[in-house]
Amino acid sequence: KKSELTSILKFVKGHYAKPNKKMYGVAKGKNIIVIHLESFQQFLIGQKIDGKEVTPFLDKLYKSKSTISFNNFYNQVGQGKTSDAENMLETSNYGLPQGSLFAQLGSENTFQAAPQILKQRAGYTSAVFHGNVASFWNRNNTYKNMGYQYFFDASYYDTSGDKALGFGLKDKLLFNDSIKYLQHLQQPFYVKYLTVTNHFPFSLDKEDEDPNFKAPDTGSKTVDDYFLTAHYLDQSIKEFYGYLEKSGLAKKSIIVLYGDHYGISDSENKYLAKVLGKNADDWTDFDNAQLQRVPLMFNMPGTKNGYIDHTYGGEIDVLPTLLHLMGISTKRYIQFGTDLISKQHDDVVAFRDQDWVTDKYTCIADQLYDNRTGKVIQPDKKTKAWQKRMQAKVQKELTLSDSLNQKNLLRFYHPKGFKAVNPEDYNYSDGLQ
Ligand code: GP9
Ligand code: MN
Image (tube, rainbow, N blue to C red; front, side, top):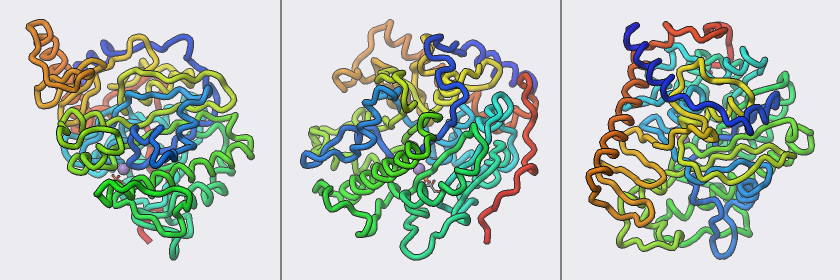
């Protein structure tokens, strides 16, 4: 076990990307508000239906001078879906090759995750707001092992009657009804909002539809409805921002918005073709891979730090990027991602099935596609050798992360100043009435 930890450390140290001096610490001391945009894909940003923006508020944030926005940012989840995205963002370690890490290992494993790094390095209070029961994805146990201090799950809100739908409390109500808890948190805080309304099968009550926004007619009800729930999610965020601004919290915070994974599955993607101005008849695996892009935005209201960043990256890279923006060094931790803003950022994006993407190529099942043409290429000798090297690196990275997690090796690793988490320190509801 010791020797495995040694090879993991060797990889992580060699892979480390040092912070970009210009951006290091620009959000130091601010509250951190993470907004998890359920099933939200990047193509929605800037997308119009009949001349109307689907997500006008997020579109504005995306282009704002106060937002660092990414347009080549990919989800990297496996079967653990939301929970895999959460795991990558909290730890910068990958989810598992099969199943959900939260469900399989969340109750036992040692974590060196965002809530405790922020608490122990900079005095942050941490909380999660979510309108589903706490036990879903084994969050209740996993969060305690990650050292989350508060978890406001469904039991903290009125979810009766038409207040909840599908996976729980409707997003507008989640943001509104959690204000009374947020207000009492000691600042600076690190909080996460897990939205649910924009989740398959994308149902929305009539009363929550916007009479001024109509769904497209794509031939797939799932795809049509996706635009309606995405529009609703956008409105819920706009309302929450209204509160952040009125209360003065906005200027004291960095707001991180990200999409966790696709909403539209590969089998339905061809129905998107018309909306995206593409041809459904020659839809390929390359097109499916393109749609794995999700939003990532770091919004710092009142600042002019923003720009649109074309760097290729994924969910594994969020934590080192965020910590560096907060002025917290990451060198001492076992994190597989690299700071997206660093000049040394690793722009090979690994998917859980060992496919990968870079700024020039997309590699699916050993086939190399040219990102500019979307066509399979026959690589020359040099490119072939490079492809092999990249494939081996992707495999190594995923395998090392898996052995770290499956053997719970972090319990033998003691980063400087990090006090191990005692899950018994936290006693929020398990959501099991
Ligand atoms: C449920 C929600 C959905 O609490 O997070 O999870 P998903 O099905 O997207 O993994
Ligand atoms: Mn999800």
